[in-house]
Amino acid sequence: MKKLTLFTVLLFAISQSFGQMYFDMITRYMIDTSSLYQKVREGIANNEQFCQQKNYMIYPIYQFVDTKPHTKEDYLNYSFLNTLIPLHRMSNNNLTGSGWLTKCDRILIVDTQGIYMGQADTYSFCSYYRCECDDVVMINQDASLSDLLYRHVFDFLFSTTEYHPWDDTRIYYGVNKRNRQVNVVYYTKYGIRNMSMEEVVKKHWEILHYDTSELKRIIYEELKHEFDSIMKDVPYEFCYF
View 1: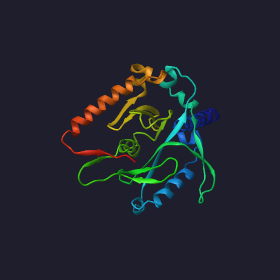
View 2: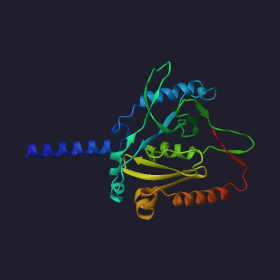
View 3: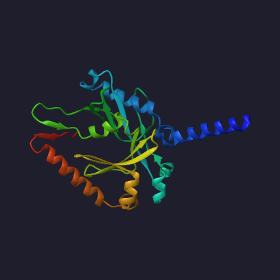
View 4: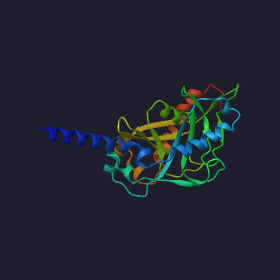
């Protein structure tokens, strides 16, 4: 009886361990965060505004590729996470030498209070401080993404599609390890729309299964309308790095 109890406890511990790893994108794909973070820190140290900040947090948004077609069930049970392939690129620098670095869609930087500070270039790792102006409100668009990570709405954000500057809407996947949940995040310069995977699959399956921009266009227009209503009497400018 004791052996059976011990076996049951061990089996439960192993299943919990593998379950945790299932949603831990860093562990699952053996991403080398130390080299990546070092590159970002070097860029921060060389920025006159950033170097005054002693405490900050770095939030990479990783870039994966998913070449396998999926069923609705694959998304609903999150097994599509099994088929992702992390993207890498060669890096060379006098301080850290040559090596492969995980490719990122964005690298966001916030202070210990969760205030968005800026971002690091994903190739050169030069850091750009948030836009500030006394005359108008500066809209730092990536602050909405960093807020999701700082408040632990998600532990990771990642993309599976290459984006271009002319794209109005980007799609990210948000992973919450504790809740064992994956959401779909629609990102625009006017804000974000965070939707559960269940809602997207059941109501907007085509956005995941087909190459369509209709839902992205609708969300973009809705967020723009909401933004314009809030800011109609406020002078503002968007921050472009």
